[in-house]
Length: 148
Image (cartoon, rainbow, N blue to C red; front, side, top):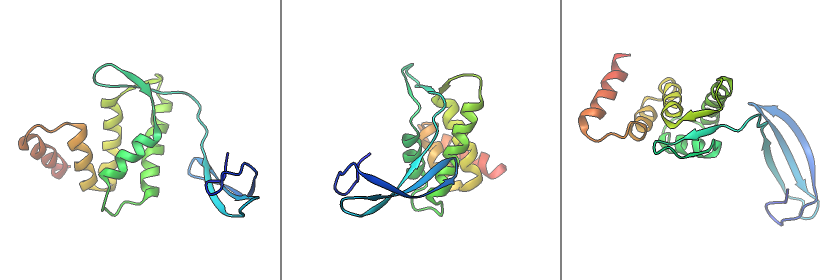
């Protein structure tokens, strides 16, 4: 690991603590003396995500965080809320018997979690996940949301 400011590889850990399925470490560069924070997560298995066209790729947590951040943009949803959703989805996937998950299932799990947090973010996620082709399909999701 290198300092993000001066690229020096000699760092010192000034503080460590456990936070939300990760270890937070405060680090200090021995060269420029600037401090920064890193988060370490345990990766137990490699999940494969099967795309709609049949391609497979490794589960990428940062892609899920990015997509959720876009869905939650300008909403009262914190980055901690987003990390919690990703943690919950990732934990659910790890508990399943299979190491493969479809984008359909992954998107559905995220929708369940978003529905509890913010309805606008839920609709935004659904518009991409369900690939709305017309206004009627959009109205159907909104009607389902209002009925629940």
